Amino acid sequence: AQSVTQLDSHVSVSEGTPVLLRCNYSSSYSPSLFWYVQHPNKGLQLLLKYTSAATLVKGINGFEAEFKKSETSFHLTKPSAHMSDAAEYFCVVSGSSGNTPLVFGKGTRLSVIA
Amino acid sequence: NAGVMQNPRHLVRRRGQEARLRCSPMKGHSHVYWYRQLPEEGLKFMVYLQKENIIDESGMPKERFSAEFPKEGPSILRIQQVVRGDSAAYFCASSYQGDEKLFFGSGTQLSVL
Image 1 (cartoon, one colour):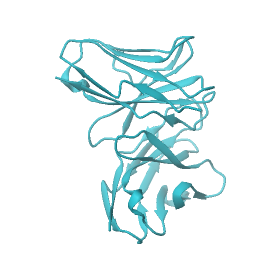
Image 2 (cartoon, rainbow over the protein chains, first blue to last red; image 1 turned 30 degrees about the horizontal axis):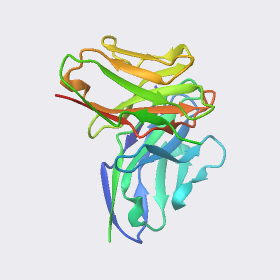
Image 3 (spheres, rainbow over the protein chains, first blue to last red; image 1 turned 90 degrees about the horizontal axis):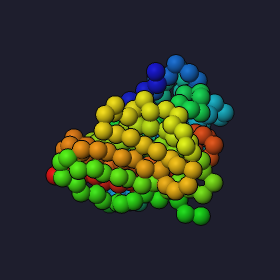
Image 4 (tube, chains in turn red, yellow; image 1 turned 45 degrees about the horizontal axis):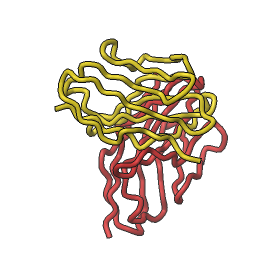
């Protein structure tokens, strides 16, 4: 069965400094991995998706994530945080079948301090 | 092209009443998913539907909960005889032909008094 563990429930960074949100996954299949962002009172938006092509995936708003099979990790990074990045971030795993429902991590709340 | 539309945004029910949550998928999408989010938790899968078909309901409680996605009209998540523990945010997502890329609605916040 697939699962994801987001290692930090809350991360706080200063504006202009790097962001690192950590995620480890477990999957019995070759996984597809995603990061979603949820702004307050809004739906979830897809940031980026990994599907066994390039291990470094670039997403929207300057975010990227690196798939490391040896570490079973898929950490999300951004070189320089912006105030508008403050939100809840979810690491998500899916199986190889399109019918396998997405499995969400518990989320990491990112705060950005001016 | 409107996104996934959910209504109502907020729904208040007393214990024992019925709650009906509606979801209109993105135009051209034939697959709908329902997720529930409890405070401080990630989203938990409930049910996956195609038009007139339930594909996977492994995350749906066995009693009081049901879902449908008719040929015409929105998908409905129905909760009968609601209890306080049903209070949560319910999110709907849609995809094109079961593609893994899901588009989410803004959710319905259900509060049971």
